[in-house]
Length: 203
Image (cartoon, rainbow, N blue to C red; front, side, top):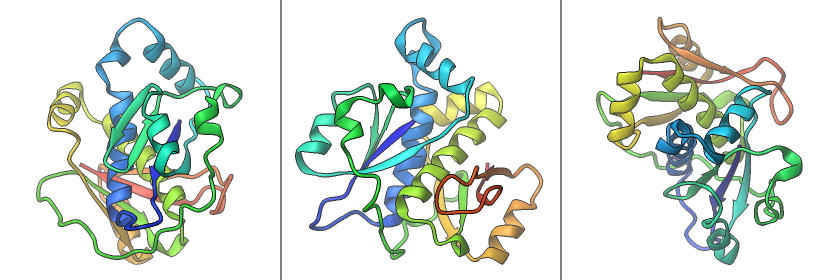
């Protein structure tokens, strides 16, 4: 699954906002009503699920950001998540976007919304915003898959509200050890060592 992050040179979004947007956009693609109907959307997701699931975050701005809005996917705030495709079939408008340049420094965080799912990231791994966006996207998907259908429908109807926090390793490990926590373990293709637990989702 490709993710495009709108990162204008002037007034870029907060890192925490980007991560929240990425988590919501990724799961929205997977739980979109079109995923339950015969056709392109469902077939693309089925093909993706049957292989190694990967996400790639890319930087977009100005016309490039506008251009990718026409491609199948879901936009939430500063992030558009696209219906997955094979690497060789990624549309040109997406493929030309840079993977590097997604650095955003931690800063102000969105207020915690009580009662909504939490996705935590291990801040000690020093992930770029693009890498972290991919990890929270994994986490929101896995959380939805781990819950029952009624919970997923309610979450979708509410617009996938959630909280994202980047935590020191000790706090992150404590959350990861909680019963019912859903962990994301990275394959290690970029930035982190294979098998690293990068994110954890708690409903």
